[in-house]
Length: 79
Image (cartoon, rainbow, N blue to C red; front, top):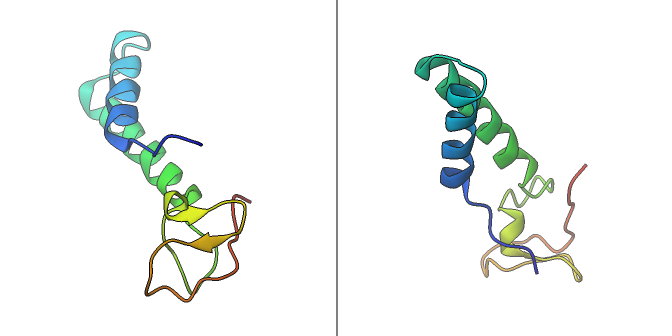
């Protein structure tokens, strides 16, 4: 089973990488990290328009959303 997505840890890793290794300013590193995190969050969302929950809230094998009130019965994963 896959670990849940930790956006804060990834954000910190990206910021430190761009500051330490690439020599970017703090502002530039934060801007880059924000765009990467935004893209990753969007990528990890159910593509079913009726659902929109995180893929962490789905059972991958059956494609069922774990949110009780959700009508999503057909999981659409990564594209």
